[in-house]
Image (cartoon, rainbow, N blue to C red; front, side):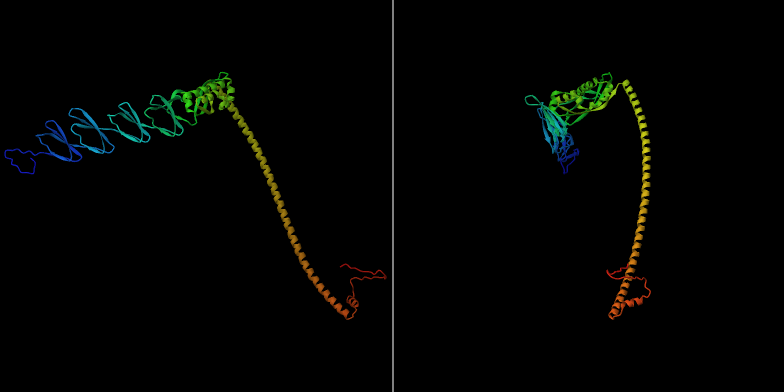
Length: 464
């Protein structure tokens, strides 16, 4: 009975039924007494009827966001199971004969790619950015791999199989980001390299890599067991500078260029030292810096696509006994050299002291000469100034005397002018001027008497 209503309870037992509701986010899983199950999607409600229902559960519906996928399995009445892929956004209420399996999402960034293996045996590589849900029906596996970055000074060797099954080779140079196709793979180089336990020793296959460096490179080379003409056993240390110029030729002509370099330079160094004794070898080590001393190395490098730019001699090592003898000789030579250097420095110091004393004497004499010259210069300047002052005084006196003389002369001229005017007036008045003058000067200063007569007439000149 469903309310609201009023009922009579005479002879009856009343049991209230519990109601279960489900909103849009849930559903009701109803299990009946006869064994079958029904799922009711919300929003809905249902009263638990003990005469029909074994139990009713409120369960969460499956919500799928965008980009999420599920595999929905369905078992039919005949027992056959079918499936379908459900992609979000969606909300799923599975039926009683349905169940879900989430599909994992694999994503690859810009520097990655997806390697997809299908159940039919195919393989597909998808460069990123991309994403795919792993479908167990179609996919055997989906893996995310890192793309191989190739810089400007690098290159990789790629092998690929075409539709006819033939394998081709190509060289890919950087800058690039390599994503191999499903039928491509990279060449792996395995060259001689330094032994991790003893870096001075090169061992096979120590270097394993995919990217070739196509810029000038260098490596250290120690040539062991080099014997000179006088049976001195030494080890020669070198530094090799080289450059890869032809990748195709290198791939065709060698599988380990480092091994070729080691063998060729060893042969050249042994040939160089075999004709020289130990002392001659030490005297000619500068020749080991020249490419002409390594014909085997340069020829082999050119043949395998390399160019040797330079070799640098870094020294040598001898056996313990020879090294001790050599060290003793070096110590003796160094001691003598230091003693000679000390004596030379002492002599140079004495010469320097003598030279400095001479320079000081010369400077002292020069200072005295300059002082005497300065004194003389002062005396000359004082004498010149004295003469100048005397000349000025004399000039002033002369100027004053000249002025006085001019005044006196003007006075005399004025007096003479007056006298001449007086005498002229007297002469005009017919006065005897001579008698007047004689009478004026009764006592003459000098008396000049001229006797005689005749010709020629006498002229008298008196000094002024």
